[in-house]
Length: 295
Image (cartoon, rainbow, N blue to C red; front, side, top):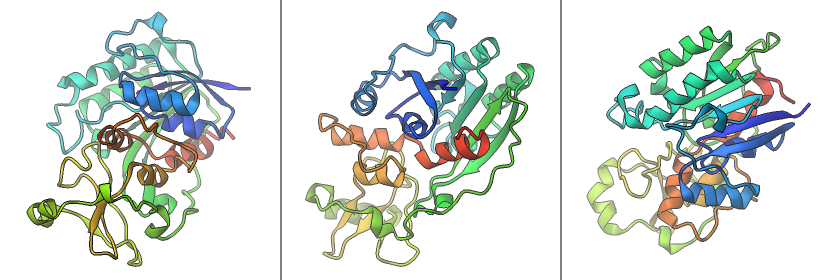
């Protein structure tokens, strides 16, 4: 039986990419970012709905078996002001939580930063899941757990009305190439970091030699290439230059596959923001396969 899914906060389509390997049909995606929707449509031949989720009515949400939700992390991120549910960017997620008890999809998957755990919104989500009769489990997953030389820790909440889900999955398998150099392929000079930036911010930049055994990258954020501190690693080249990791390379690190493309019409600065806001496809596949066993 085909599972009908909704992809809220669809971005560039990490869930749709993961779902392609399962008997899952994404019947609708929702996102207000026009450039994210351009990339989504180019790769999945479906244009997401750009309706504001803050006020979407019940009838605007199609019936489905599964909800995927990756709401804005800024209200909870340690890099933000951590205003929690008081942050306007949490309004849409709070609105969707209200509808969960009405729509009651069979499966619900939520992704966010680790600091989401313990927040007021997190507490409300769990309370509503309990109220609606869901069983749930929380998982801390990082790209490195799949053998990827990148740190990208995220929390995932998996909830279901299915009584047969045991919530005791096998550990993630490290099936990816072991070396960072295997993920790097760009030679575009436009990616080079200027000597002025290096001189000014050298103390806070994470510069990585990809040929060094065991080298890894720190988590890329939507502010990569714009915010200098803790927004992502830079690469040290044999030529003596230091460069940024390209959006295409970050897509590879996130498991999107070599055939996924961000259209050339998308400005580079926007592309960095899109990939920085995305989710590791392998983590979603793991949850679908090992936790929910939708094989």
